[in-house]
Amino acid sequence: MKKKILILGGGISKERQISLETAKQVKKALKKKYRVLQSDLDINFENKLKFFKPEVVFNALHGRFGEDGYAQSILENNKIKYTHSGILSSALAMDKIASKKIFNKNNLLTPKFIKFNSNSEVNSNLKNKIRKKLKFPVVIKPINEGSSVGVYISTEKNLKKNLIKLKKYKEIIIEEFINGREIQVAILGKKKLGAIELKPKRKFYDYKAKYDTKSKTEHIIPVNLTKKSLNKVLNIALKAHKLLKCKGVTRSDFKFFKNKFYLLELNTQPGMTRLSLVPEIAAYKGMNFLELLEWILKDASIKR
Image 1 (cartoon, one colour):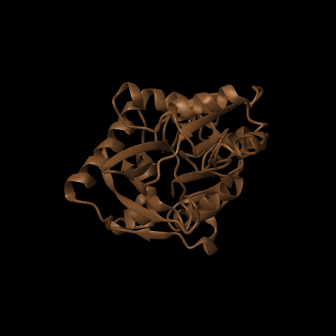
Image 2 (cartoon, rainbow, N blue to C red):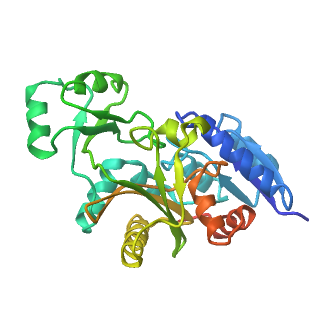
């Protein structure tokens, strides 16, 4: 009897289409060896769980309600094994301010930031605070979105206009802009899987650079770093993974500037699309896509 796997994809976040693409690629690979059912995170989801009775749920959701502990709590309540990190780890990683506080407390270098409530006024006091603590330009983004959704690089001149664009989000993080190389690191359990460098044609590695095939972001692997520097960034990513008590696979995003690695954020459910970085790093290390997925499935558990 083939093992039954339910792939959870779609959801209601801004990353719905990317999640569906991840689910599509995962299903295509797994159906060769397993009984596979794909489901959205909808009102019928728990009924599907009871009907199909999967041995494992492969969580292919991205963003809010899928990567922040919400879907994980449903699965734990139903006592079903699921992939990736647990409730608390997912929530902490998704909350950019909460995770950055943990990084700061444990001496992991991360860009300086201030929190901004979208109901607050964009006035000279805010601009003075930014000049004093961060300096312009700054990066502004929601505290709980992924895939660079709602991210803007703002000068003093266009700060107000960009903050208005994010008015629907209650809390915004305003972060110092680090003008450096884009380095991404994958962690697999307790193993430092590897790193990749990105050279986007756009201003930075935003949503379009990640998923638009026409954006022509250059992927560089192996990364052109000294052995010492490469080991350093791999160790930082592993430390972040452990600090948040993550499971399975994670991807940490860094900027490398003036020989320093700045940890931007950690992703607990990195994409598994044809353009995604973790499968690319795994392939370079000799691990094909199905092997990567099977490792993730084997690592799944009910309680974290």
